[in-house]
Figure (cartoon, helix red, strand yellow):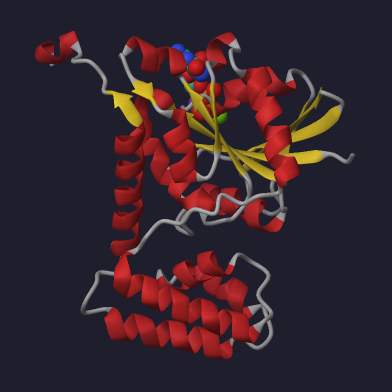
Length: 277
Ligand code: GDP
Ligand code: K
Ligand code: MG
């Protein structure tokens, strides 16, 4: 049984580094990603007879090509081919945190969600239906409190089991009839080219978003001229019907709201200090 490689993803301040430290202790290595000043932190742990390598990705809200941190985070996932993504979410601020989860799903890796800050969520009176959340995200859900090291063992067990399954979430963000039709056309063109080794639905979406890094990636594969032309033609064709700069973000946000609302079984109680603000 070989090493399991895990990319640890999450928003800034969700407790990712705390979890990373709980899991890997002193067995850490800090360096830089090749050619850029973004810190690369890796750590090991041995658990239930397995060697687990955790890569602490930069904390980000999104996975666009607009920031170096976001590019690094997504490139580690799509290029370094980790076995599992562990997505740490702040359970006390879940709707916002699910926006990143929506983008991670598209990378089609087995996923575990650590619902961290469970103590804060509990204090706020929040309760979730984990089964529902698992169904809507395709991830295994584990509740954690990084600060007191609660749930770490369960998180590692879930990570090993999800890695063994090799099952991608199998859930997609629905971008509406118009865009879904165009995504399907581009996926078909990518399949016909037969050369691109990244998740094709993700590539199709990013081409419609005109993501410059993904355009470059696609150019690097043989036989993709027709795909790139088709993407440009579709963008031109639909640009008056939808605002391509924001429409994908809107649908991801809609997904996050939906997962949040459907998973929430007890809403946060009114915060008494609110009237003082
Ligand atoms: P990162 O930005 O995601 O790496 O977050 P950090 O690990 O630096 O944590 C941000 C802050 O949240 C720190 O003050 C942590 O001590 C605190 N923290 C982490 N996990 C928890 C948790 O589960 N509950 C509470 N109450 N605080 C936490
Ligand atoms: K921090
Ligand atoms: Mg951190």
